[in-house]
Image (cartoon, rainbow, N blue to C red; front, side):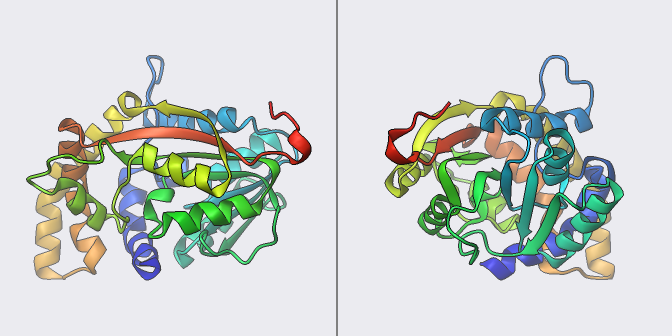
Length: 286
């Protein structure tokens, strides 16, 4: 599974470069749209702002960006809050790109990027004030191992903040298997419900402080992806038939269809979540 995740991002980064304005936005996530959001790049930044506010990031916080992509969130946190960020990913290409982005934005001293598995990092206990996971928890095959590792890595009183896709209901009819097809096209693990995840977090020792349904705020991005499916359909089919392409690159355009149709059918939701590792001696967390 880890090899699949790395292969997906290595093979499809050029697609994000074209459709997601990767050089400017440095983000692979959906983006949050509000009434005053003017464009897609603003929507992408809104996600970073939302998670930073949720975690109450402060100057000097040590942050683990678990699934850092090309470094956009780490650079945002370093620039805006002077946070000390370690971004980890399974993709060699993402690490190289993130390092270049950090140098370009003059935050290389505050950001590091390493090839590590966020379910088994090998890092020291209690290393971080905040763990940041933007649309990355859905890739973990063993969610219990993931949350146990994050609990171990946080200092007492440390915070986990995440946003991700979740199955809408534990039992739901999916005659077209849209979620399964979407998951496969993005090298994700089967989606779980928010309640499933909060249960795992609680069993690991976390206290759940907030969950927020943001499904309505990502709808414009989902529709943008659907449009990219239609715009990319003919070129992708022609390219694949003439030149061939690696597995994820060959079928990536189809994900725009699967995620949008599944969203229209109410099969998945987009939530953010704040969980806290209890402080020692009963200290109250703000």
